[in-house]
Image (cartoon, rainbow, N blue to C red):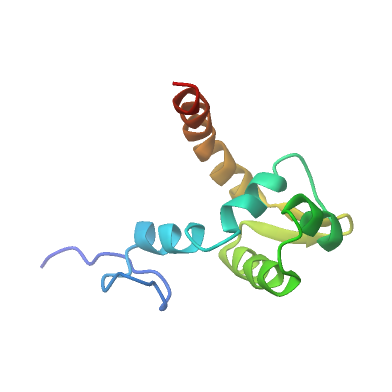
Length: 108
C-alpha cells in the first residue's frame, strides 16, 4: 500500500494535493505575509507599530494576515504586541540565506 501524503488544511490555492509545502507557499505568498514576518524579526510590535513598519498597509489586511499567521503557529499575541513564535523564528531563519542572496543579487 502506498504511503499516504500528509495534506494541509483546505484552502490551498493552486494545489489539489494540499501538500504541506504548497500550503506554506500559499500562505507566504499572500500580500504582506512575508513583510509581517520580516518586521517582527527583532521583537514584538503593537498593531499600530506594525502597520507603520509595513508602510501604512491597510489595517484590515494586516489583521487578516496576522490571524492567518497566528492560526499557522508563526505569530502570537503577547503583552508587548505581536511577536514571532519559536516556529516563526525558525521560519525567519530559513529565509535568512535567501535574504543574503537577494542582497548580493541586487548589487550585480
